[in-house]
Image 1 (tube, rainbow, N blue to C red):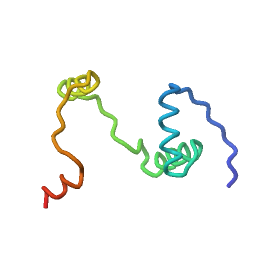
Image 2: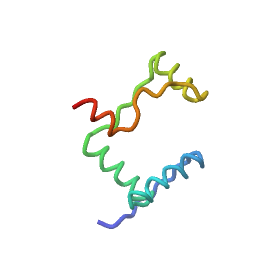
Image 3: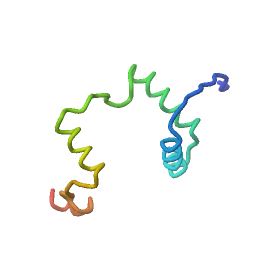
Image 4: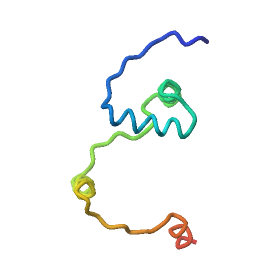
Length: 85
């Protein structure tokens, strides 16, 4: 089926740039990514990810990270998986 529908969306330039770097890395265009999103919405009959309001502890942790705080609990993922075995 030919692509004949158009979508206009406004998004912050920084978010657009960061997302397009990811799209390039996986070999798809922004249009392909939007199409994938729409197909997943149809397939799942809802958003293809959880949408939730973070609780107070999560909000505080995210704010701490934004301020440059926080603590690294684990090193590289290889090390984490080794510890789990």
